[in-house]
Length: 311
Image (tube, rainbow, N blue to C red; front, side):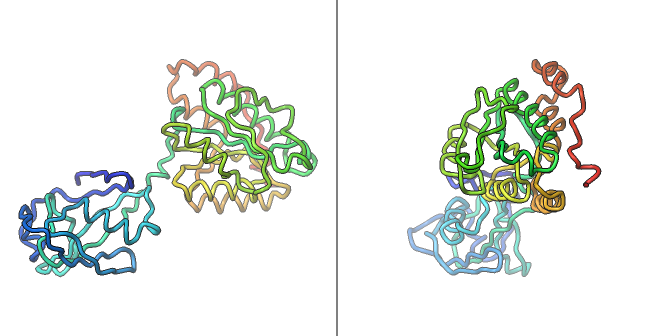
């Protein structure tokens, strides 16, 4: 299949490259534009079917734009799609032939492929940002294994500085709950933002993300796993970001809440990982110029922070 990328909407499609023998009046019109009259077309997506029309001679790009105008609020822009045409002689849909133009009444549908671009799992420094969520002093006595996750969080912040990865930090109602713990060195972070909302996805954070060219992945850690971490992760994937939650740098007051949140998030396509896995994936090669510095960070294994014992 030849992949085509469609205009500003960023919907990707994979129409077949077959030349297409006849498949009804519309398919027979390949290569014959002619006239400015409108042609009725039934646009199908998921369980929906909406009649509309396009100018005679319209091709793939016009069909995609019509799909977006009809179903834009339901189309996940971060998936790949195939456009198919209903072929009367076969009694079923076929992949839209290369060079297709609309010449007669027809029925087309938009079919999402199973692979989602947001779950590939690759991390590169150029496309990654770190989110450090609410690692504050007042949480110290309440959060399970707080000392361990602070230690791991500091490794991640050091790794981000070494690799030049932007870091966004939030503090939940710092007036009442205090600032970020002193053990975490926030030197050089892109943004430190107070909040009252549980999710880190605030307008200021979205604006900061928009300033980072090519950002695709968020490495997320902090507290609490089942509240702020979970809501941030769900908001981010809803915006098409790929999310990696660092399990050994995230915790809750209750291990039950922590573990069930991680399991739920994994089922939602969020990547549950560890600090060492993240740092080594970001350098990817022992010949990376920063490998030795990252290696020094992980020479001693990170604390398990209760992930194995679950007590």
